Amino acid sequence: QVQLVESGGGLVQPGGSLRLSCAASRSLFSIYAMGWYRQAPGKQRELVAAFTSGGSTNYADSVKGRFRISRDNAKNTVYLQMNSLKPEDTAVYYCNAVITTPENRFLEVWGQGTLVTASS
Image (cartoon, rainbow, N blue to C red; front, top):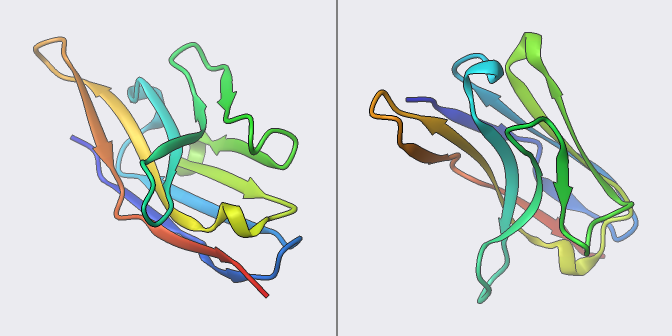
């Protein structure tokens, strides 16, 4: 298993920036894929940005050019740098990891979530 601990959420004015962190309890090299999702009130959870198993990145169209996902393997941490925040970015942001089990199955693990509010 793996535990994920997010931090860095908060209140920011539109146009501002925040950086979210997701610390994993084990090496990122042992994790199949990792990323960030978000869920706004009354909406479904959606992918924001992710590292694929091949190491490439995917971004939601709504955040391309504004958000950047990165990783620090030495710290077992994945980051989400969010710039030019908009009110519609307001949501609970969740870190997600996909790991493989001894039975060769995929298992999704979620962090507890961190609230990001972009409002004046």
